[in-house]
Length: 329
Ligand code: TYM
Image (cartoon, rainbow, N blue to C red; front, side):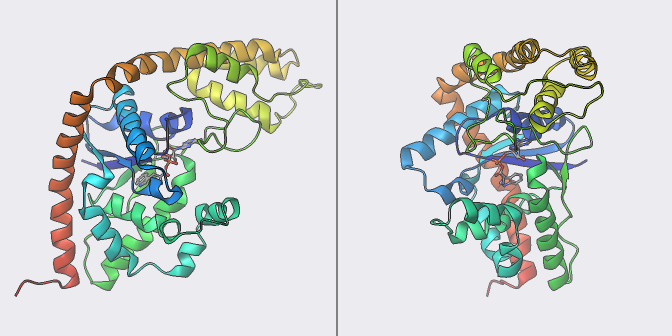
């Protein structure tokens, strides 16, 4: 049986990228494996949220996980900051994580380029906290989107280094995982790059139908192909990539054939795409609203998750402390 773990930063509402990159995969696996899914609220502190925003975002994301089909009984659903063993393992792993390798991490380089005024130590050591998240439950499969591949590679480096340093075979080598074999990158609607919270190009699971229609109709496209079998430019490929995950294979094929024959009308394609996105997200949106209004239920879920997560995490920390050489007198 696999130990499966994944998490999402609590920096706001979930979007289609989070769902198709991580959550949907996880939901498919939760009944056959030992599964952990958590809200990465420590990770969200690198951008200094206000106390109100921090709490509100954690609550929103917890409700959204459940609305997407995460079963708090079948899997362990918890909030990172409820498990003090995670920051302890983070501290221990940091002793064997080197400044050079952390500085070479692509996501760190991107963050310092975008926010040169906030290059804090939390950002630099983001990969060791993520490794601690994964290794604390000795997970071996991590459903994530393509953008997290390098972080998983670093997790394997830290796990192997620990094993070698102490001459043990304790931590597994976790791999980034997607049910459909390939890791996915859901693009944004602005003609370039991936869908992201900070990019302003996202469709959120909680968006209502009208908002989704407006966003999709405004998505970047072009004047259309001029020759049969023309390669698709990035903005157009992006629309097809989203269509591939939300629409039926027949619908996808229909518009792909139209493109190939130079007969495509992007207005029609966008209308269909918007309706198919609405179809996927509207049952979730309705559940999000109901769950968000039930504080008692959310409190129970968080408490149960924290208990289950700590049971597993405390065993790991006990082992790790012993391996490192912390002993009682
Ligand atoms: P975060 O919060 O940026 O994103 C959460 C998950 O959503 C995926 N994702 C995407 N997948 C496909 N296309 C996109 N456009 C897209 N945008 C986001 C991400 O790949 C991720 O799986 N560092 C992580 C959170 C984290 C974590 C962990 C994940 C902390 N500790 C341990 C797994 C295991 C992050 O910032 O993801």
